[in-house]
Length: 229
Length: 229
DNA sequence: ATAATAGTGTCTGTAAGACAGTATGGT
DNA sequence: ACCATACTGTCTTACAGACACTATTAT
Image 1 (tube, rainbow over the protein chains, first blue to last red):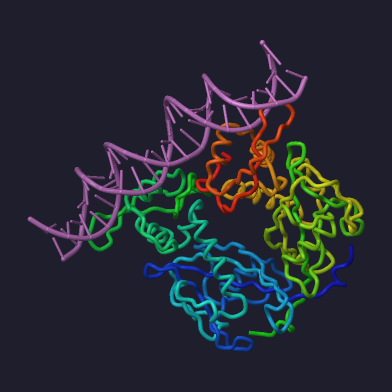
Image 2: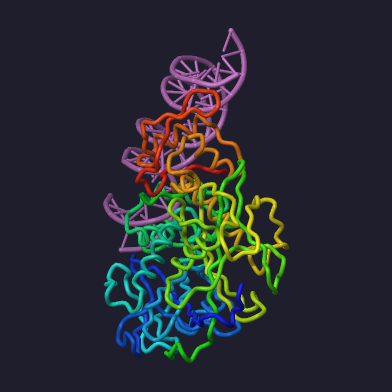
């Protein structure tokens, strides 16, 4: 086996698929590119991995830099790596994409790097207006999120620390793009052991009976899973 | 945003978690390292990504080089990337790990690179005898394989092109490490639409009634999934 | 005949989907 | 009073797990 220093050098970046739920629809955070290539196109936020940081750290740092969010609530996980030889015309770049699920955040651009940043509904992102291979990365991220809601407690990452069953259901409906029966959903999530912890608090939203307020429980999976059919 | 050529250079490798089922147990393909660091330790097969090839191509090439297998049967997918700053003492290396599920192969070492290669039962691999962070990568690969058998037709990737229900069940039992009820398993997999295609062929294994021989069907998921409890 | 494996039928408990009905607030 | 939302209970159907039973081969 040969020594690493004899082998081709790559630039390594992290790209972020940051998803949130706003106004009943799944949104992704995009930035407008200020330079060539792809000047003026929308792109996923991201940046280069520094010499001394792990991939996960780099993703968290870029998230904070570009959105002003110190990923306390929410969820960050590695999505996958993209390294087609021609994906960046300047040189060989491997991007390690990460998926972030965040509660509804204050308008972006609080950050620094990007010329402009915006939340865009995922079903209104035209694939050909995204830079590089970001349309593929976005599609993979959305699919991962949709799949994970089935068997993991991750939907709560889209909510504030305290939330109602209706808010949780709204997340599922936005991410899956279909209506769920409120009564069966309630029965399912409240009976799943360790999924929700009742805070005792009640909350009135407009009219109607006040809803119980929950926190995330210790469960790491939902078995049997919810079905998105 | 800055130009990639101004940024730190990484070496990028692919590492392979190659799994197969032999003698009723899940095995992983390991190679003995011939050089420092970790000279003499077991490691996952792998190597450096070349200047002009995609990550997936690099993984397939390394698989062929180190095992002599031209990944026709079987399955290859990306597992995840590992890039802790100190994972290789020589320089900054990011490894894109891939998972390979292969039918029982002829003894390795048919390949070239590795000083020695061997199939090792996964539950007999001591974590601290693997080079670099390969113990973690192996654990992630095995967990991925176990999880995917639940809801995907991937178990067939461990079988020859034509196989019986009993052979398929043996795969599940080896990967999950628990016995399954042959009758319920048979009912489940034969009634899953598109999972198996009856070839009409029958096969007698020792004594007992001959078993129907199947090929993989077009199904991409098993819904509802099997449960490994 | 006996053993062994392949494959089918039946029963039971659990849970999902559909939806009636009750509880508790705002207007 | 009325409506909207939260929550509970009931019915039906589907399916997993358990296991009796039949089918077809080797010894």
